[in-house]
Length: 155
Image 1 (spheres, one colour):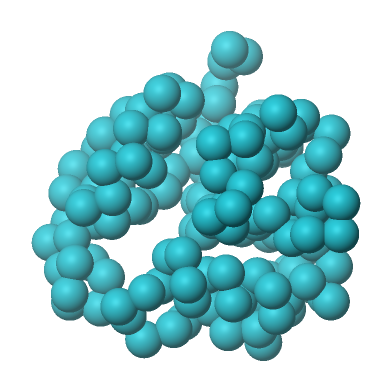
Image 2 (cartoon, rainbow, N blue to C red):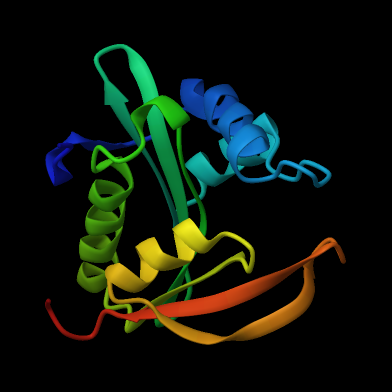
């Protein structure tokens, strides 16, 4: 299993791999929004954490979270199919939750495809709660379930 300490901040050289995994694992069926240039801008942005997990030399997964005044948004999270069910996503969420709590964030919120039952179950297992459904959220094509995790207390 992957541990919290296996998560690292992304480097600009990771942008192409992050963009490619996003296109394949998250943005399939949509116009790609997370280009390598946009990922690079996120890596450089002071109020954004872009984290990655590498297993050996292999790129296993990434997550992007932006900070607001008192809440953070988990914008993207993906794990390469060959590394799923090995704790990669859980380790990234744990790292980001700690960072959000340390930054004084009261919650982390996210949106997930309403049809992605596996991801919804995963987030619920981690303590995220459903906030509501937004029809046509993804480019007018697919609905999104909005979810949030209270970070104002330690679990």
